[in-house]
Image 1: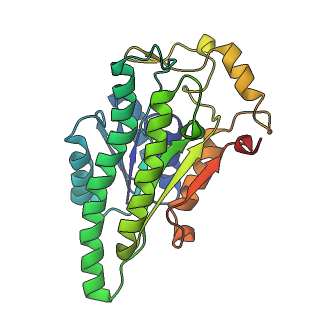
Image 2: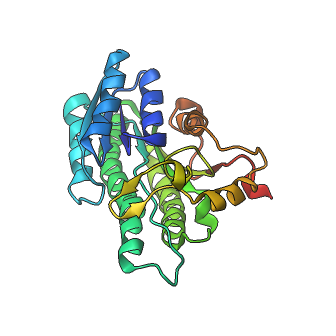
Length: 265
């Protein structure tokens, strides 16, 4: 049983489809009803099980709605993937409070709320399993950070949020260890999604925030990628599936960089 936010598009959708292919039953969330329902229908068409709940992770009540749905539909929760997000770029001397807070609220606070609610439930399940069997099954939390978390031009808000997610995740790894809860984060570089495609080739917005990178800036960014190409959604999802699997039952507190060797140069 898995819960994935941001599951209507990009990496979140790819993770949801990948987990479903491995047999997971899913509770999915996206800001917009249409995209999350599309992912649900794809999973059902392939013979899987999923339910969708639209809403913003900035809504303080959403996390409990998602976890309650997992409880009522499936009775347990084994995997969390927090993929909801967008960009709202600007140089720091021009960045507004709304730009700053909007990104912090979605990426960092939204992740915190979903993880907090999930861990609370996972702890109770683990306690019951330890009392009954002497040990608790492994459960996995996978959060999404970014290469920008190390600092990036025009992304003070996004960089701060993504760096914060790493600290949050490592703390959850420490606190969850006694309950056999693994918590890891993946820092993505240039992955082919609406957030990293050329602005000139798409018309993608989240409210006032234009998604994508100006073509000239994108070309400069591409030149810093030793593999000389963006990663695909499938290539992004693969490491997440590993961290969500029993192959990673002794992996916790890790920041796994998936960036085509960008951070080496």
